[in-house]
Length: 264
Image (cartoon, rainbow, N blue to C red; front, side, top):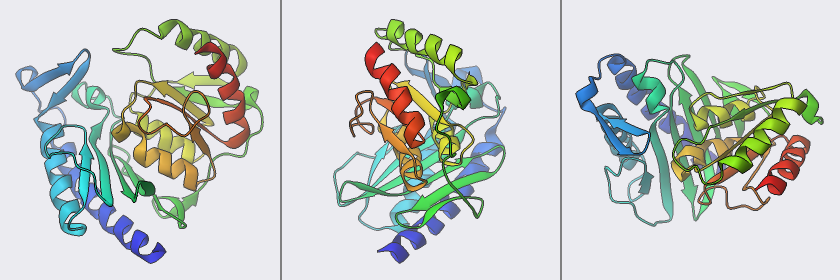
């Protein structure tokens, strides 16, 4: 199956890059009246929806009979043996405010197992991708999680709560500890980029809650394939549908999990 995954990954990249050109071309063109509020602080525009339709069309042709989990619900979600998980524009708020950190995230599951991931950061034209058994690459150069055994030497990333505030106190407790016991914390505004950066060794770790499957699926696969660890806040494997994620190199993950599990 490795050759099949490799072929699907190559073709998925082509589809993603084509869609990215549409997104890039719309930067700065979206009017306020064209922006919808799906829920508290969750924005969407015609760009997200059109990008998703392009991805679904291309990926359906690539893998006939495959089904989809998508953020913008442009297609009925279904269960199936081959399932794409898509975020057509992760970092929509950054895009709308012309802050240059946003991406397309595409993952594929086969029989409920993640088998490939593509995260394309549009502004820097950086494609993070990998397939099961094939390693992880950044623009054709193989990457791995950073070799680091010490939380104190780590640079972490996170996402601030923006609609689910019930666990804010626990989150802030973790944030305070990590501020005082790491090299620093970054908040990029696009979880898929954060996860891809962990897989590529740019960040040592990442944590956030209230994430959705399309936010994490591709990045989660890349982290696992690049030698990292990704779990929920209790150290379990419900990171895809459990709305909480810790991702890091193995020893940094253990240190982060100790702090987060205690706080939450």
